[in-house]
Length: 205
Image 1 (cartoon, rainbow, N blue to C red):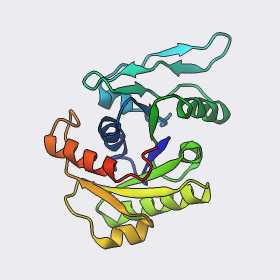
Image 2 (image 1 turned 135 degrees about the horizontal axis):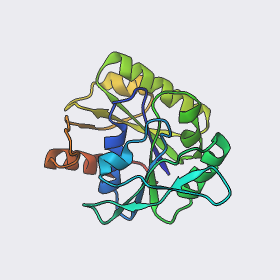
Image 3 (image 1 turned 90 degrees about the vertical axis):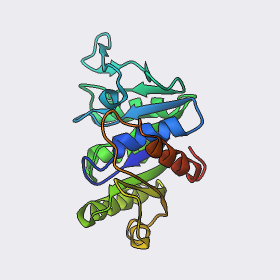
Image 4 (image 1 turned 60 degrees about the vertical axis):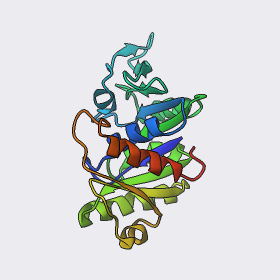
């Protein structure tokens, strides 16, 4: 499982999750791990229907097919689930036969720690501004503290990345992605940027 993490909301994590899911050799499962502000399903253009588990209050979503990419399946975030059940849910997704890419909650709080702990590797996403990069560096430090390697950084909404970005995050810059608007991943330049980034991910887990 590859975790896509960042320090702030709006940094480009969800777009990067979908961009890499499409760019990696399929089949790929794109997973939303943001229980408080789930939006992966909406950005992917799939419905987030949750089905109550018999005898429990937990609601788990079903996997949905991406409407324009047959190699990508989307797993929306669950509802009404505690931390322990959430971790079990994520580990089930990680054990899926498909390669999994998970959209993490923003920041370095407890909600973000669960997917970082479950993942095999982390890619940190940040726009090219000092506060966002500092927060991304904190997220990268938390991933390492949890024992998960940070394999790279993606700079969003930019066409360049100074060497200082790699030094700050403590991981190589895998690539930059130009500004994207909704619907996402329709511009050839953006899709090509994610293909280049996918080719640079060590192990591509």
